Each structure stands twice: as C-alpha cells, then as structure tokens.
Image (cartoon, rainbow, N blue to C red):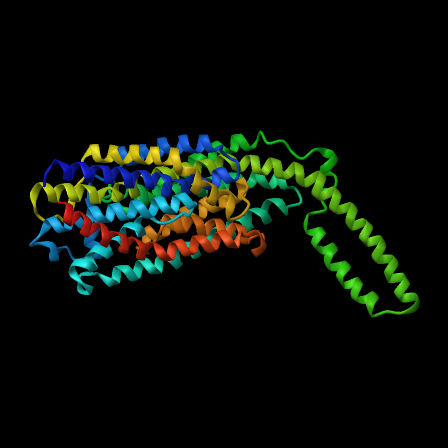
Length: 471
C-alpha cells in the first residue's frame, strides 16, 4: 500500500472526527444552550476545550478495534488488506451518515453508525456467519434501555425539584437547604461517571471502593463550598412572602373545589341553586386573586432566583459530560484509523491497536472544527426543538443522562450517550405533559436512530468495493 492509501486513511479519520464534533459532541451542550445557561459561542468554546483535552490527554492509547466485537476478524487472516479496505469504507460510511444527520439536526449515535458500517462490509465479504449477532442484539436493546432509563431518572429528578422547591411554602428557604444536597449528589455521580466512562482505561486497576471514596470526597468538598454561596441568596421580598403561606398547591385545591361546586349547582334547583351559584362566584373571585398574587408576584421572583442558582449546576454537569466524552468515545472512534495504519504497515490482522499521540491530536482538532462549524444544528434540535428547557430542566436532563451512563458502565449494560441524553430531555418534557413535546421532531429523531445501522451497512458495502477497486 502506497503513500496515497495513508493519506486517504488520515483524511477519512479527520472527516469522521469532524462529524463527531458536529453531531455527537453537540449533545453535551445542547441543553445548556436551550436553557440559555450558555450562549452558543460560549458552549462551542467550552466544549471544544474540554473535548480536545479529554481526547488528547486522557484518550486511550490502546484501542481494541471495533471490528472484533461485530465481525470475526479471522476471516480476513489470508487477506488483511481487505480488512483495511473495509475499515476505511466503514469510516467513510459513518462520516457520510453523520454529516447527513447533522445537516438535518438529527442527534444520532456515532458508535451505532460505525457498528452498522462494520456489519455491512463484514456481511459483504464473510456472509452471515462472519457476524457476532449477540453483540448486535445488545445494540438494538440499547435503543430502548438508554432513553427509557435516562428519561425516568430525569423525570423524577425534575419532579422532585419542583415539589421540593417550587411547591414549598418558603421556596427560597427550601432552595438553600436543597442545593448542597444536589451539589453533593451531582459531583458524586459525575465523578464516578468520569472514572468509569471517561477514563476507565486509566483507572481500570483501581479498586471500586477507592473510586467510591474519591467521588464521595469530591461531592463533600463541593457541597461544603456551595453552602457559602447559597447563604448569599436573598429571601423573597416581605410583600410577597406574606402571602407565601398560600402554596401553589392552593391553586390546585381551588380548581377541585370549583369543579365540585359546579356539580352541586347543576344538581340543585331553586334557592339552593342560587346560593351555590353565589358561593361559586365569590370563590372564583378569590381564586383569581390568589392566582394573580401567587403566580405573578411570588412565582416570578422565586422562579428567577431558583433558575439562576441552577445555571452553574447545569454548566458543570455539561462540562464533565463533554470531558468524559472526549476521553472515552473519541479515542474509540479513531481507533479504526489506527487499526488501518497498523494493517497497512504489518500486513497482518491486529486485534488491539496502539493509538499514536498524533492520531489523538488529529481527532481532537477534527472534533473542535466540526463542533465550531456545524455543531449548532444538533445543539438547536436538542436544546430547543424537542421541548422547552430551563436551567432546572436542563440540569435534570444532564443528571439523568450522566446517571444512566454511570449505571450502564458499572453493570455492563448496552448504552448510547446520545440516546441517553435525548431520553432525558424527553423525560423532563413529559413532566409538563405530552403537549410539551414536539412530536414531529421526536418522530424524525426516532426514525434516524432506526435507520442508522442499515444505512451505515449499505454505504460501507459500496465504499468497501470502491476502495478495493482503487487500491
């Protein structure tokens, strides 16, 4: 294989990294932009720094090539060149599909794109027996497990925040007592996520209780620091606080009482009918007063304060997700490029490839450029087109996704980072009801998930034979 082959391989590796930045990385910052915790420029800059740092400094230098999990590489032992052509075709196929998805703003899984591509050329060359079908079953299962689990966690986290703070008779006091607990849990979960998902290859030999102890220490320190910040939160103005004993639950009780009285009125006649009608009129007037006072006066003050406190929590969770993604997923995505180069040099099938530093740097730079140029398309979908996001909802979504990734990594469950985050966004949207979800956008996303593997397979077969003819 000549120098032309190496140039094509490097260009395709960069192309895939560019598309990872445009699609996969944008997921981590989508909720922060959608909730207006960060501007688009701020999100791109922060994600670029963290993703590159994770990929370059903590990215795995030893990558088990992806074909070993999907197809049997021994079928290429007689002709290693064909495995290299197939991996090149897979990179090209995954890049084309990711670029197409990014253009339309569809958040899809990079891993699934490459898996589908590898499946395609494996079937084309070795037939049905060349494929590890059990692995594919796990991947299909992840389409359900990832969004369902993260959606449930995000839903219950947001509902808990809403009940604990917004529905409290003194929401600011509840906020001050709740934030340190949330900070502890967030830093504990995200620290473990970083260890098991982001830099697992570095701490693989670390005993589990060491990781738990380290995460607990991070959580305790963060919670201790947060206490000093929440003390500076100002209470509700006295003019609003005097009515705050009327919890927002009162509005729900008013609605129920009015409905019951309407039934009594409809079943009554004569003087009773008139007296009940008068009571309904008076109660309706009081209901309107309470609603205006609570929602307009108190809730506006409370909501601004609460949402402002959750902004840094959401940004921190998004940053740690981006760093973990760069350290783990990016190195795995460019692993096939390292495998291709090893095959070209040694003319033998390799099961584990050394990933040189320059390839990690290539991947990091490609991600940054992809995020900066096309990342806004997927950020727009995740942050604004699925459901309305606020800092509290965005925080619940990020936390739900991070917790799902941690649990899946710990127990060996199949998982997709992209699917987890989308499921979490849906979960916080459903907390407001199905009407809060943009079903048209959701339909497009689900369809894109379903067709990712078959489209990747078809494209890789085409490119596999194309490279075979060219080289």
